[in-house]
Image (cartoon, rainbow, N blue to C red; front, side):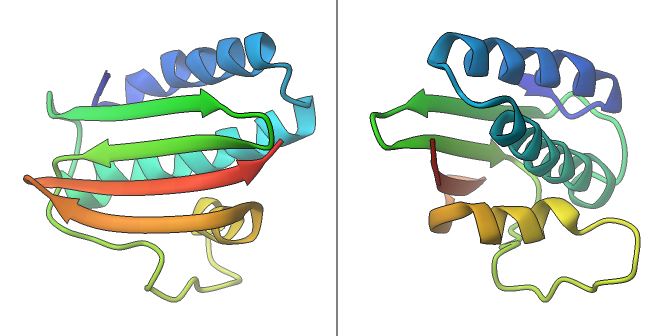
Length: 123
């Protein structure tokens, strides 16, 4: 769990890199996944909570034989990043675009006061 604060970006990246190292995930795949998680996290902080706060953000990573399972949850107001158009040519939005392109399966739900985004990414 991370707090919805920009200062948590470095610990989030370290968490992902440790997971990738232990799971034997290719460096380029890990870097792309890092962009996805950073974008989701910055969007949670900036748009969902309108700035740094102590709201929790949960990131769960699981390594399966064929794919990595990523679950991203926050307590910001409901927002499904998979249905909103990504505007190319502007700053931001890259993580959502990468999530759409990298993931073989994507699922969004708002459950029990949490946005939950699940992604399956091939190893």
